[in-house]
Image (cartoon, rainbow, N blue to C red; front, top):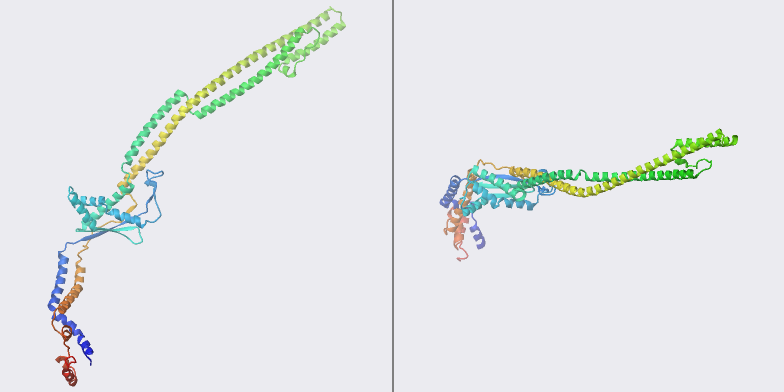
Length: 492
């Protein structure tokens, strides 16, 4: 067998050699094992308990505008956007959770620092920030909040306060309507007073200017002028007809005065005598009297009674006809005079109506201007009154912490401490103690330059191990003697 084989066999440690290490270093093994167990017991029973509680916030998509300052409705009618909450939004929420305004409220409420010492307050805020952790949950819009502290009830209350403070801070930063109710209330009162003032002025102007509905009144005035113009035109047409009749009758009368022959009356136009049936009858009678007169002159001597009677009757009828026609022309003149007066009256009415319409147009402009001002004040009053109500609702919503953040799981007081957990510590301390004890024993054994086993001889010296008495007893005698008497090559 070569030297290399002898060396390899000499360096092989058996299970007995390994186990013997712990018996050789049983003091170090025992002390380490007991020390770890005692340390675990001290850690379990002497360390102040640390409690941990959690809460969960659901981050909803942002409100789809309008808010109360926007064009449409406010948060009272706001709807949520159906889009998802992106990662940057979640990170913004997480960052704002540790904002100084939020942490300061927790510190001041639970007296974690002196209220008059700003440095102490900042240090307490740093401690609260160190106890607090916020993590977004995978594939969700939920943020999990973890808070650790010294008391079960204390950590739950402080995390509850932190959550409420954060929601108030978020509302104040993004949705706050503080001061807007007072603003809208002031504007509402101002425009209400203006509206009432302009309304009273409008009523007084309506009485003074006699204007109610300018458009209707102007239309009525124009309609009156049109009717008067139409009546005037009709009167003028009628006036022209009467003039024509009067001229015709005057012409006939003039011829009657110069007519000394025994003839009939000059013929009158049919339309001129249609309205005078008595004149028509008198013309018929005159024609018969003329016939009778001609017969009397033919049948009797001139100067005889029948001839004189016939002449008298004929002359009398002509006189009557002339008087009738004179009466007709007189009546026509009177009627024309009446029509002319009517036309003059209509002209005066038209002139008055035109003047009233011009005045109404000017007054209407003033009235419409006041109406416009009244309408604008009314619209502003109604608008600001609506906004005032919306602001009041939003103030109530802010007080109720109405936001697109919902606390889906409130923190509760833990029933057992997060650390130390005695059962888990003692359970883990046993294998840890065994591992450390074995490591210390093995390290102590390896550190000492002593030979405990045949393997140590080759590890720490330049000598070769050939055998031992206990090993020789378990082998055949010849073979044992051979190994005992074989010199090493190196020595040879």
